[in-house]
Length: 136
Image (cartoon, rainbow, N blue to C red):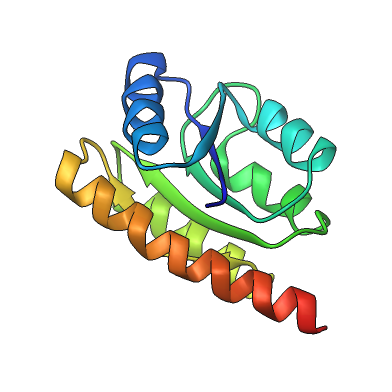
């Protein structure tokens, strides 16, 4: 199982996601903004899945994209928001244009079943990324 990084300034929501993911076997790190996410992603290694909220203080999800490109580890990203889907779509397009591995976007609130399904999908995607990275 990979490492899940949750970048969201809504602590209650992040704790909920972390609890579910931990029960599903993931290692979880919660970051309250994009700066903390980048710091953690740079200081650790191994396959990672990052759930990145679009609207956060200090550094939002779109601003994270430019710096995340330089992180050298197998990494999957999904953007999450409780707001406009226009911003979410823009973030996904920007990240994809920079050759980041981006999954479907997530809208808050997310149900327990939907989040478990998402984690199962990401486990498969991370395994594939890790295999590609090891064969390179």
